[in-house]
Image (cartoon, rainbow, N blue to C red; front, side, top):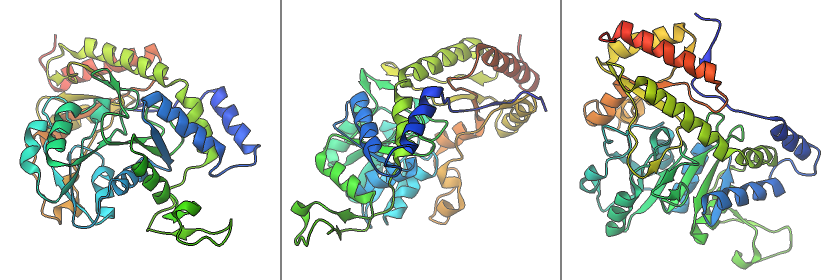
Length: 386
């Protein structure tokens, strides 16, 4: 094992970020206060969404978005199997069921050509996943959804800062869920947000993140005084803190710079690996400017080859990862009747995929170390190199 270790992702915190957090620690508010509202306004302004509701994780953002859209027991969502389990699990939390549609074999995003055949009378939501920061094909997906009166919720945990056909992520779907985990485009430590143009969905999201409680006298059948509130529906404690949001607002000032650096690294990788036998580089569709949360290469030769390459790279100090084990492979979903072989594109994608290090703070020397090491290891294991 090399003394050098380059992880697949890492946050970048500077002194201004730290000072913004310190300022909150010295203020009157630590939990939900003015910093939360400032962060929400910053998100809305950046993305072009009319409303942003910040919550305490990306998973909470998905759960909140599904609730705001009216998902309930007996309903069904359609989503991609090539995602982290939270995309599907958040529907189970509300008593809904999950149906998967296979992905495109090139981008790993939900395949619109397979979507319509999966729709039933129970389908309430379609949830495309912006895999690795590449936006899904929203124009095609929304056209299908509109024909059937279905709401589209974007799982944009990877893609804040990405652009699809001239539009920023955040307004491409009816509701959008984003994440602020440390390896994501910007971080609040842990956190997420729901973006929407619909004021009623935003109101429902705000209520849901705070126990389902309503304090507005205009929405209360009785009002006993300034202290009075009612829990009008089941909600959760998904509130985010001023401490986290101060960090998030500070990070947002550098989001465009972070995305530019990610694109530079991705371009260098693609240049270096495009002609490397045995390895496929990511595909970018026309009109898309990815956020490059992940740079996922795929290897010829299947799982055995992938494992050998993965272990050799880890031994060399490169913190590669695999994204993702298809959701329907997990025991919870197997108990629901899902089996291997049901979604061949997602399964093939998973079995050959390796995520390489990519984050804004990577130095040029670290990028070149990854390039040289990957080329050497792939040539050794897969063969056929020059």
